[in-house]
Image (cartoon, rainbow, N blue to C red; front, side, top):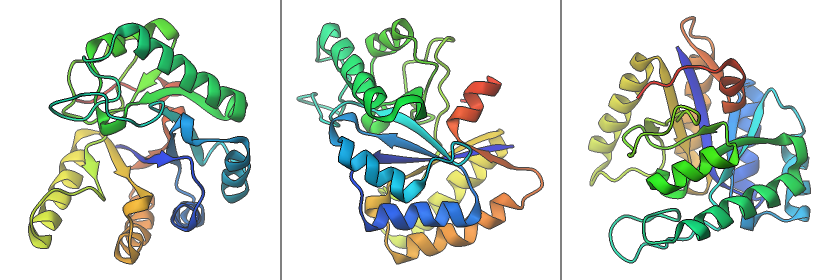
Length: 233
């Protein structure tokens, strides 16, 4: 059983980000961090490094879109969706990766996660053309990723629940977690800006339980790329 945690919308230092990093460091649990390129500056990267340190066994830094903007006039939000010309999507992927690479150097992994966990077929083709080694979306995302860009998908959403009441949300979360753990590869998505005290307390209880579970190994996406793990959809 392989588990990975992916924290999205990274780029601006803050108290909740620092608290999240402290939690994962304290329990020595690896974390994949999705950085929005246009949000990151040299000064912000220095602050993030000051909070995290440069332990590449714990932190896997990846590209999260370009500006995290919706370009679809109708339907579900997408930054890399069908409304935009492929030339603009290719440009934004290059700009995003180039900016992060210039600031972060070898700390950056060649992995892309699209805002709102969705992108179109053209974007998948461009990812392959540009040499990205992996993708991370939601487990239900379509279309299928090309074999050269495996999709290490998330199946558990801790902080953007859509249920109407707390009890229903709790049961849905536990079902997602159970189904994910039974699948062999369980990706868990985090949005630190949405976390309150209860959310931090929940992670503080679950991280050591998962870490000490004999059937589980927690990694970040850099480890999966190196090991070329198979993808479970």
